[in-house]
Image (cartoon, rainbow, N blue to C red):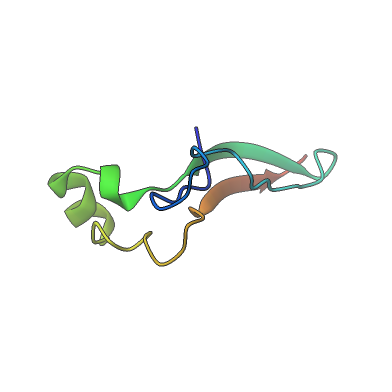
Length: 70
């Protein structure tokens, strides 16, 4: 998985970005790196995204769903 890419760079895509949270207070229920250009047309339509939505930067969005610890 990579969080950064630049086709004009001599460096290969890499995992540069991280997200932190307190595991004492939060439970991660789901997490992923969002690259809309890799989603199918059906998935884009279901989610309300366009294939270019994550191309505004050379860094991809990180998504983390959390629930409070009980």
